[in-house]
Structure formats: C-alpha cells, structure tokens
Image 1: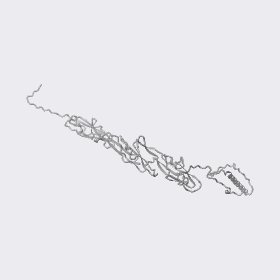
Image 2 (image 1 turned 30 degrees about the horizontal axis):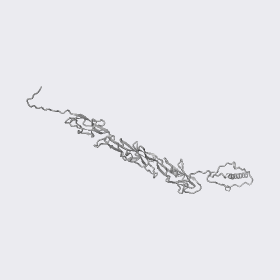
Image 3 (image 1 turned 90 degrees about the vertical axis):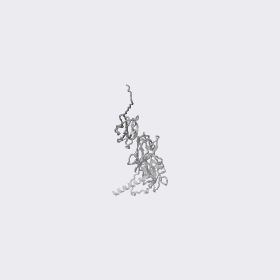
Image 4 (image 1 turned 180 degrees about the vertical axis):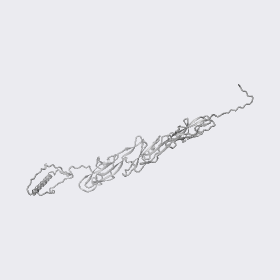
Length: 412
C-alpha cells in the first residue's frame, strides 16, 4: 500500500564496506625464490596493501614483478603504491615475482648480460690481463632491457720466459694480436670465451739463439758448415733464422696463418786450407755451385748447407775455391773428377836398386808384356808408359830370379 506521512520524518541510510579482498604475492617458481606477506588481506576502500619483498635462491636473481604478464615493478620490494586499484577499489589480484638464472653470482639475471671470459690455454706459458668482462643491458630508467650485440673491450696476452704469444681464438675465428685488436672490432650477442695460446720461443731472426717473440714452430733455421775443418772453414753468419708463415686476411675478413717458403741469405765466407779448394755446397739432397744458387732456392724446413772441398795438390793455406780473394762461396765452376789422375809419374831405371847379376850364365825367362794385363797405376792416369814399365818390371824379375838361383848353388 501507500504510506502517508503526516509529520516530518528523517531516514538514515547506513553503508557497510565490502569484505576485504585477498592480494597474493607469489614467486614464479618456489625453487627460484620466495616472497613475503602472502596472502595480503586488504579492505577494498580503506585498506592499505602491505606489499612484498622478493628474495632469490642461490643461483638465481630477481628480475621483476608482473601482474597478468605485465611488468609493474623492477624492484625486489613491491611497494603499496605499486598495487593498483580498479575503479578506486582494491580488488583480488596476484603479483608474481620473476627470477632468472644467475651463474656468476652478481645478483643480475644472466639473460640481461653478455659476459666475455678471457683465459690462458696454459698458465705455465702465458697469462691474460683481464679474466672476465660483464656487460649489463638497461634502459634509460635503469631497468633491465633486451640484449644487443656488443664488442669486447679485450684482454692482453703476455707470454712467460721461453714462450711467445701465438693467437687468440673464440673457437670460430683467430686473432694474432696480443691485445685482440682484431676481435675488438667484432660484435657478440652471447657469452663468449676467448682463449690465448702460447708456444715455445727460443730462436730469433736478429740473434739466432735468442727469442724474438715469434713461436719457433713458425720459423726455420739455416746453418752453414764445413765437411772437414782440416780442408776448409766457413765463417760469417753461419746460422740464420727465417719465418715461413705469414698472416693473411681471407675473403671472409678473418685472419689465418699461411705457409710462405723462405730463401737463405747465405752471408758466409768459405776459406780453403792446404791443398784443397772449395768445390760446392750441398744440403744432402742436391748441390749448389755457389751462394747465389742457395739464395735462389726456397725452403719450408730447417736446412744445413755443407761446404765441400776437392784436393788440388801443392800446399799453402788461404782463401781457395771461394771465387775471389775474399774466399766467399762463389765457386768458379762445378767440379768434375778427372779420369786419369792428378798427373804423370815416370820411373827411371836409376831409381830402382838392382842386385848384382850372377857370374855364371843363368836361364832367363822372358815375359812378353802383352801377356801381362796391367791396370793403370792408381791416381796417375799412366797408360802411354805401359810398355816401358812392363820391360822394367821384367828386368827386375829376371835379376831377382838369377840372384835366388846363385844363392841356392852356394848353399849346396
């Protein structure tokens, strides 16, 4: 029905706040980290959220807080003002604390970092100046942001005594400069390890028996010796070192070592002694008439050149067979051994002592020289005197036979 009022009437309307809502603060994974104040009961109008603090477990780092997949805070502490109202009221909601892997323990998720590691392949051979270089990516507000490709600042490789720097490598390309000047121009999007290699260094170009900063495996040694120091000597730069590899840039822009044969300098002097003259050089597999032929050759392995001499007769000591008064390695021509010996030897009857002939006649046996095959006398080349020599020998034989017969008769 209808209510009628005959006098003034006052009505009071009372409002009651809706029940408190639950705001949850949870980690993305219980193994990654923990949160505080969960759950948080808040009155929709008059309530004030407590907020929460996210703490990462070992091996992880806090990333951000998100609500419905949207980042609401980059700070580990989620403050009350970070809790948004909907239509002026707090509503039931869930905030997720996200964590990321943190292998290097710097409390920054690795996904927002690019880390460069520098190591020595063998610390007994050489060291590096910087071990680790970390780049963290943040926006203008200091919040984490996605990574972009970046160049390393690099590290300096220093060899220890007896060794030389060889190269840096990132497992794909090599850098042959100790300070990584080549690799510092490259960019990387992922964590990268650079390894410095070193190798033995005991010989050198300037001073053959001292290191020169180049690994010995890229160098060869030339040595010059005499076959017999009683026949001749070799002096000058008798040991020299050459590098047989060079660094070249390929079509892909990367550097690599390439084999490059080297030619000897052959700055040596040969001095012959006594009755010998310089004949030729040999490396054991081929001969060289002079130093120019050695200089014209190319080698990729260590080689020893030996000076050989030939007998020349006579006497005296001096720079012989060197192709000039300086006694260098320049031979006049190649040596061809003679077929007839060094000269002619003549034996006269007066030079042969003969025993007296027997007083009584004896039987004499004549030997025709044509029946006695004789070889040329060694080292004389004697062939034209063959008949004369045969007669002389026959005479000696007859005399000896007669003398022997006479002694037998006397004894009887």
